[in-house]
Image (cartoon, rainbow, N blue to C red; front, side, top):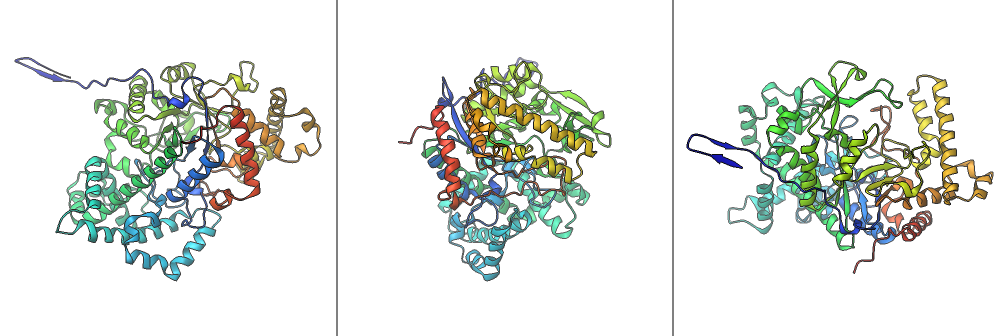
Length: 597
């Protein structure tokens, strides 16, 4: 809005926002739906390169919608990371939240790969085929080796694109016009990200121990320096290469969402927006003035972390974000709503307050700093409506009542876990008392799976890693777990999801059996929450946990592959048994997606 008279001119930004965030038609009224969550990196197939890719995602969508009849496919954050183990593989500690990890590209599906003789020759070489077989067979995702191999092939693919479509002086081709249109849409955000990637690659080749941009020569630590501008001019092809990768990522991810929609899904892909950024990554380099230096974000002491937690990333500078009209925040939401129908906001308390810790101080000595939550939530609702994207706010932990009231008013879904939901008397909540505008799940990546919880595998693992200060505390945790399991059994019996006779069977307590699995799946899908999403680990009774908080090198986090291959999903009898349980409950609870026309 502008105002002027003969002496002065004044302008101010006005953002007009809707009262509520977007709600898909399928969830309006009495509508309910179900979904399944996966870690894309963990998908296994006979054709991928040792990490799940967008081709695998499309095949999983075909199976999940076709066999399970789900409406939602939940994904880990797909943000760009450096793919260097062990410090740069967490999807929740990304280099950039604006762009995505090229490691998920299905190279064989790329048009330019099919026309690149050099790339195909390299892939068909015996050494490459042997490496691919080794990476596929690896129990864990080998990020660095997969990324290195994919970059070797993608560089050859890109050179073919340059020769066929970009450097041709005779004129533009259809593909070059599409790429040019993409570049024009992205502008400065992509320039900054691609420049960082090219610089990072250059300096990491010279010094493999250069993990962060503050280890670069000082002139290159400033994105606006003369040296950086000269680098951009002299290394334009390298920078264009990273832009090309993001173009291909966007195209393939959009194809996956289009597939889900074509099969009848009203939501389809459900993305995840991480809370923070790697301080040594692209976003912190490009937008240094928008982050508070000398301070990190964490959490105060609780039962899980007696000394508090320091998460290691800088908080956003709330005043500078606001004075800039929240332009970077708007772009962040828009980018993460692309090619999806739902977006989970990790730690939505970020919009209300963050726990600040002065660098060098102990986490327990930190303090809360409030944010402009009304501004941020209103903008979130606006971008949700524009993108036609459902918003889920992860509101676990200590959450003041007024926070959930504000989220409910804006129609931002709450995030409720089976393990933690309690009624006013402190007992496990009945299915019918779950809040309707919520996503209900069993667990998260940071918590034990159903099978792991029931067998105590998570506690044994933490004990083997020395994470209990004493044996007494370990045994106290085991005793607490026994009580929690007994409480769950009592609730399942009282709610009619488990027969009392089954509990009296001596074999019932031997492990995580079928009757218990059926009861918990049925309980969750019978809740009044409009959306229920179950992880593939909980569907298939996998006891392995994706991440063990408090570990980096001690445990192979973010690397666990799915127990079944994609090919086995269609034919394994154990898979079919789990599918029948799921299908029965989503049909009987009204969550089954209508068949596509």
